[in-house]
Every structure is written in structure tokens, then in C-alpha cells.
Length: 272
Length: 310
Image (cartoon, rainbow over all chains, first blue to last red):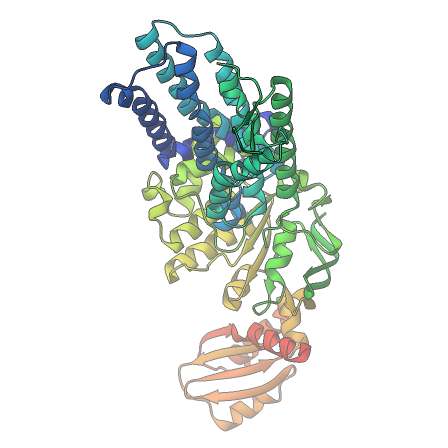
């Protein structure tokens, strides 16, 4: 039986095929389900626990939203680790690349397809978290500030940034687990410590992606940089807040550079 | 038309030389066995042809396309089975083949019947909707063959295709490969199993320590290395005079008599084998039950070459 192969499949079509099957992976491995549960539990806890403990809610909706959405960054890091940690490394580690790579498909298309799948899958838990936040705002304040929409856009930008960096780890490292853990601890711990140390030296860490991601809540309730002087002590505490054009550019650069680098690495990586 | 060409193909892993200046030309429609001990460079060659690794020097061409620089054009012509294939455990064979078929751009109306056909061919129809995570090694190997032939490629590159298969599976695998050869496809088969190569290939390339030791038709090699042996089974034992007569025949190198049979060391090609059989049956009136070239001949060539190489 003759099989009619199309002369040129087209890069976009191939990216679409990879995206579909990668999303199927997240569904079958119940990762999407797990992250959705994390998003729902986090949201519900933030809404219900203050009620259960009789904690007085802030007077202004923006203040409540500022606290609620300050957890969005952590959720995005979890999403990144879940959906991108093993995206590339597993093809080499589990030898599935022996079946996938000897096909007439550019490795760049494979990386892009997997990236799109990670981003699309990430939209669901983050979108759900924002919906829960909006529902909380409606139930408490009978209003949803417009800035929540802008915050969601910043959250998506940070998702791109985290996915890009995690893809780079996944491309460089041999182990999926190592890439997942490195990504998680990099954003949750290492970059946080580095940012704090830099801040102590009175330098604004505007170039750090985790600092730039602060724009997710800064857009809801903008804060000004300040210096706190402790009376009777020479010690000064600096508090910086991300500035919008800079934070967008920084995150976009991390996303773009990391994704391009991961494609370069995958193109050069040998399946020995 | 040359289906596969390697020119000065060399590969180092760090300081270790895995493949040294390999020059090979495989014409379209031929089936070539790629033989060699572990670490000979067989898998390295196949991986370069499949764009999984890059050569340190030289180049590999598939249907005239550089396997690395023009990998998309080159791989359109290839169905490959590299090492022991691993698949996504959460997919079924149908889903896996759909994925790979769609990536190759197989038209939708062709894909479904084609998947059913290849799954029947490799005897996996019964498990077509079972998650691959539950598959044995042999079943994965069958699926590996299915994905290699899914797009009906003109060139098949197979690395130890019978690995992990039971005797029946090995036989079925051989039948599949023979079917491909009969269809005029080019088959490049790396294997340790000399019997498998003898049964499916018309030529062999012998490789050791990254170097090509010989590349020729199997019967030519057997003649060159005086390795051809013919087993003759008889109804009754021969008299010493009859054995002497055979020993003195042209192209006969040696004769070993067994209880009801003979092993003849023979230097002739296939036509001369036919003559020998005619002499035994017609002139000497021997009660021949069977007359067959020994499958051990290729093994002897292989061992001689490896020994000389060392």
C-alpha cells in the first residue's frame, strides 16, 4: 500500500501536532489535574481561612487582591516545573528521542511545540486562580478592579519567562528530575536570596526575573521605593518595587534568550 | 542510484575513536548486513545516518542528501529503528503511530488504514489500544518496526531489529524484512546475529574497532575466505573410495565424513555448487536427502576478519 506523504508538512503544522500530543501527555499523566488542584486549593485557602479565623479583611479591594495575587508567582513557578522540567531532558533520558528525532522534523519545531503546550496548559491553572481571586473580590467587595486583568497579563509574561528558563535547564541537563528541581529552587529560593542580598546593598535588582515578576501585584496596588531608617541605628532597609517598562523588558529578555538558547542546545545535543 | 553513501565518516567520543574513515556505498534496492562485535561502530554509523549524532569528519548521504546538513530531506526517505526503542508509556500504539504519521505529514485518509496494516504486520493489532507502559521489550521492538515502516519508506535502517524477540518473533521479523527486500527497498541492517543477516541480506559490511574490514556479496566473501561449506545428508554412509572421489573434485577443499552425511569445504560459487550436486546425484548415484550451504560459513568469515583485524 502506497502512503501519500505530503511534500512539505509545514513547520507550523508540525508544531501544532507536537503541542497536541504534549498536552495529551499532561492530561494522561494527570499533571494538569494536579496543578489545577494546587491552584484551587491555594485560592480557596486564601479566601476561606481569613473568614474561618475571623481576620478582618482590608478595607480596599486592591489591598486584598494585592495579598491574594502575591501567590501567583509561586503558582507560576510550580506550573513551569511541572510542564517544562522534563519536556526536553526526558527525550534523551528515557531514549524516546530515538523514535522521535529520526523523523523529518526540525528539532526547533519540537521545542516550540512543547513550549506552546506548556504555555497553553499553564493558562488553565493560572486562569482558574485568577477566576477564584475575582470571585473572592466579588463576594467580599462586590467589585473586581480592572487592574486584575493587567495583573493576569503580567502573570502570563512571567509564565513565559519561567517556562523559557526551565526549558533551558531541561535542554542542558541530562536528568528531567534535576531540571525540574533546579527550576523550582532557582525561582523559589536561589533568586529570592540573591535579590534580597542585592537589595541589602542598596541596589535595585531590576534585572532579576523574580523581582521583575513583582509587577504582577505592583500593577494592582502600586508601591513606591522606600528606605526605612531604624531610629538610633545606622542600619537602613531598602524596599524596591519593579518599574513597569523595565520589568516587562527584563522578563521578555529572559524568555526570549532562554528559549532561543534551549533551541540551540537541542539542535546541537547528540543522542549518543 | 546510491541509497546510502558514507565518505570518510569518522567519529570520536572525546578521545575514543568510534568510527574511522568509513567509506560505504549501498545501491538502492540492496539489503546490506552491517556486522561487527560490540563497540565496532555499527550504532555510531546508524546514529549519524539518522541525524542523532554528528560526525567528527566526513559525511553521510541518503538519496544524495547530507544526513546532517539536509536531515529533513534525507530522513523523508528513511524508516529507522535505533537501539531498543522506547515510546511514550502513556500512549497506545495507535496514538503513537498517529503522532509520528502526522509529524511526517501522512494524509489523514491514509493514516488510519495504514496504522491498522502495520500493526497487523507486526502482530500488535490485539494490543493496538493498550498503553505502551504495559508492553514487554519484544512488543516494543515490534512497535519499533511498525513505526519504521509506517510511511512505507524506500530505505530501512535497522539496528538489531530482533533484539528482545522470541524465536517466533525473530522469524516474523525476518519475514517482514524479506518482504521489504522483495518490494525493492534498501535495507541496512546492523546485527550480531549472523544467521539473521545470512537469511535477509545479499551483502555484508564487516566492521571492527570503527574500521571497515570487508564489504562484498556474502557468497563472494565465503569464496574469498574459503569458508563455504556444504552439508550433504545421505540415506546411507559412503564408502571410503566414494569420499576420495569427492575429495579430488574441482573446487573441493576438504571433505569430512559423518555417519550419514558429509561436510564439503567448497570454493565455488552458486553455479558450481549446482554442478557439484548434479555430479553427486547423477554421476555417483548417491542417495542425497539434502544439500545445503552451511550457515556457519559467514560466521567463519566474520571470525577470520576480526582475527586478522586484531
